Length: 191
Image 1 (cartoon, rainbow, N blue to C red):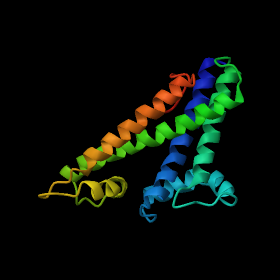
Image 2 (cartoon, one colour; image 1 turned 180 degrees about the vertical axis):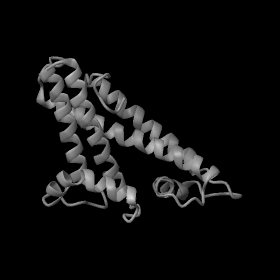
Image 3 (cartoon, rainbow, N blue to C red; image 1 turned 30 degrees about the vertical axis):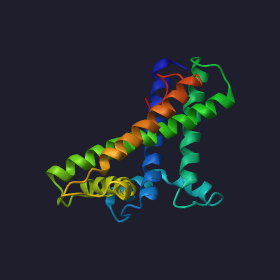
């Protein structure tokens, strides 16, 4: 397999993984399913998750089927690197690397959603565009548990600060675990 072909298939698998992760976050954060963006992404990537969801049911709102699909897709991407000759075949390492890659990707997507939600709340809080409503719903759902510890005071919401600190801690923790396990930095979608 040529290097260009490898990167093409790896990029396609990474885009599909990102769609599955968004599907996972939509279900976890309980966004509006009538939003056309949500419906489009779910229609595009949810079929493999539906098959696994018939065996693995969501627990406390966590859609483990989508996580399993994302890990399997990332395992296939790492396996492509084995076929291309970039890695040695080790199934346990590939599975662990895939798990770390998916977890870090979830945290990165959450970071960008939180950042976009904060910026949109300053600039266009009352806009009716589906993308803006989706980002505001997702960011508000992420900030909600942190508002318990740091409630809004004087019209200002400081809970995002706590959320960013917790997110950065988890991201650095999983990144150090991933790199400590020998995961190639250049190969993971999460970096």
